[in-house]
Each structure stands twice: as C-alpha cells, then as structure tokens.
Length: 428
Image (cartoon, rainbow, N blue to C red):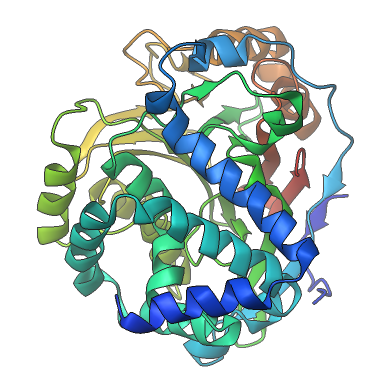
C-alpha cells in the first residue's frame, strides 16, 4: 500500500521524585499475570541487550558475526498503523490519540527501561539533569501530558525517550549480544540501520531505509501524520511514547529524512563529552529533525543546514533527500559539528557512487564492522541509476544481511511527488 498526500488520508485512530518509587510499586501491584509475563520479556530484552556483553565476555557475537548469520525470510509489505497528531492541540493532549491504543505496552516499556538504567543511577542523574534545561518547553509539555495520561512520572517517560543516549553514556557496546536460547533471539538486538538515497537517471531522488533495533520496540512502531490547521504538515515513522523522530520522515514536496546510530569514535570519557555537549545546549539526536519538521516553512536547504549544525548529546548520522537532482546527503555528525558530508554528485569513498549514497553504522572513510555496507553497495550497483524505483530499493533493503532478524521496519520516500511508505518487518 502506498500513501499519497495530495489529499488527506483518514487515520485510525519533575525529574526524580520520591513519587517514582511509589508509582513503580503500584504499577507492579496492578499488573495482571499476563501483563507481568509480557513485562518480564521486555525487561529481559532490555537487560540482556545492554548488560550481557560485559557480564558474559565469552560466547559473544560481534555485530559482523550476527549480521552474517542467516536471516529470516523476507516479510510481505505490511503497512504500519497510521495515527494523526495535531500540532494545533495543547502539547499535553497531542499524543493521546496514540497512547489511547498503546497505553499498556508503552507503560511496560517505560517501566522496563527505567529498571534497566536504575543500575546506573548516577550516570542517568547527571545526564538527565544536564540535558533537561535544553529541552524546549513545548516538548516538556508533550512528555508531561504523556506521563499524566499513563500514570507515570515525567522522569520515567523522559528516561525512556533517552534510550539511545543513555545506552552510550553507560559505556556498554550497543552492538554486542550473546548467544541466547531460541526463545529470546528475537527479543534482543542492536541499534543499527541502513539508509540509501539514490538519484534515478531522470533526476528523481528516492530515499529508502531499514531500522534494525531492539525488537521489543516492534509492537509500538507506527506512522504518525503531524497536522497543522487541519492539514498534513509531515509524516513520520516513530515509536509510540517517543516524541522525537526515531525513524524516518517526509515533509511533502520538500524533503525526507532518516537517522542512523553512530558509535562514538572515542569510547573513553563518553559521559564527560555528553555533559560538555549539554552545556553547549546539546539535545537528543531525535529532536533536531522534529524541531525542523515542526517549523511552518521547512525546505531541503534549511533542513540540511540545521541538521549539520545543531548540537547533539551523541554522534549520529542524518540522511536527507530532496526534490531536485543532487539533493541527497549523509551528514556524519559529531556532537557539535559535521565530521563529513557525503552528497549526491560527488566522488564517494566507502558510501556509494555519484548517483547514490548508502550509510550503515560505520564512517564511510573507515572499514565497516559488518558486511551490510558491502552487500548494499553491490546490490545498488547491480540496480543501476536507470532502474532506481521504490520496488528496486525494497529489493535492496530485503537482501541479507541488509535485511536481518532485527529489522523492525522499512521506509521509503520520494519527496518530489510526496510519497511515503512504511512497512513492519519484525516484531515480538
């Protein structure tokens, strides 16, 4: 199913306090046996995903080893559920249409992630307290409204929204897991992605992306249409309960976006560098795209400039595509500046050809830690510029190991004619 936005599409629809401990206790007491079982799986996934690499240094699989294993068979194209979030509503109420359907599972995920990070409370306290003054008031109000609706504290929801940053801050390898029983294999995973921007020989720019992420996020993966004055402003693939753009997005007729996790090039003193970035106004890596997309006027040029210069708490790859030939780039971000920009039309290093750029989770000028890059490059070269279509990108993103058992969703966009397609691949 492809979604065109020429016409509207119907949709289905403070910090640390003593209260937090009480709410945690009440939540456990109120859970049904079924909910407790579900929560135990989520907690196990969170705990194993981040902690087991250091707890069990033997019998470990690196990112390269995991991705070279045989993936599951490709899934059919299953569109994600679509919701409307109106930016005309009071911030506290904006996410109720989403949370009314996902309240229980989002509460469990928030609860699990807070339990996970409680083992690193000093680190969490420092980073949350340093970051909070930088969070725009409108997004604080969205988080508070979500917390109130679910009966959680502001802190619990904020910590869940900081999953990527806190994973890096605690100093655990985000891409290492251990061999697990088969029953848990789909409950853990990395924070990896593959993004492609390709220009067809006629000048049309296409954008495709896989998100490989801990699979317990699968049940809350959705598409959201963000509305202003009753009309579509932009659409995005996000996780229910997260206010940033954690997946991909399209500003119809203007530009598209995806985000890939980037490991810190220097694994020493990561928390200290995060705190230094926070002192400069640094924010979560998922918020700059949201802030740019929320603006009444947002073009490829303005988005490119903003995403290249905003200060973030963690390194990241921002991938953007536009409506005109040559409008497509991978922005490799340090916390305070761009380490590199790989654009359509220029000679590439390890990231593609002049007619396409491809980004996984390694800097394009360095050897990759796994074989997704090599596989993706070979597949794209086999396609050729004259044959670039959305179906061709689907085939590339469905070819192992680019497609693997941790691929949550695949997203596709053509900004020139305002098409955006997003499909579920794996879930719990």
